[in-house]
Image (cartoon, rainbow, N blue to C red):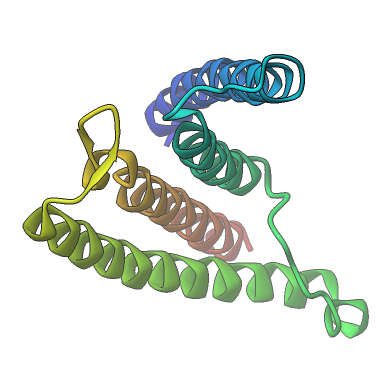
Amino acid sequence: MDRWERIDEVIGRMEQALLVTLLSALILVAFSQIILRNFFSTGIAWGDALVRCLVLWTGFIGATIAAREGKHICIDVFSQWLSPKGKKFAAIIIDAFSFLICCFLTYAALKFIHNEFQMKGIAFLGIPSWVSEIILPLTFSLMAFRYFFYFLKGVLMVNQREREK
């Protein structure tokens, strides 16, 4: 487990650096488009497509960071009535369910990328559209691995406590 936590920490640092870089590029291109359009009646031909791609990438990288930090959207209606042991059990169930959903979404995203590859669409600057959308299966699979790790960690902690009794 300790090895995975170190690997996850390195991946987390890379995610944050990539997010800062992409957000900076997003702001720079969007700001440039505004200035060019309003003051010079021109613009970057591929700027809007790049901004859409950067929004997609920043959103999905942000989702992986939220999953890593346990700050993903969570509807927490019933946990107020659960005991501490019940809350831990519920967390294990939620992590397992999140893992399964992320696996399903990874599969769907891979099918989507395959279809985009076959259609040979262009996103901008001659870059195939599937390249700009590759973030989908990458982030869903990373979130699936994280939720699987959290599930495993929760199960092992429960088993360890049971053995200590």
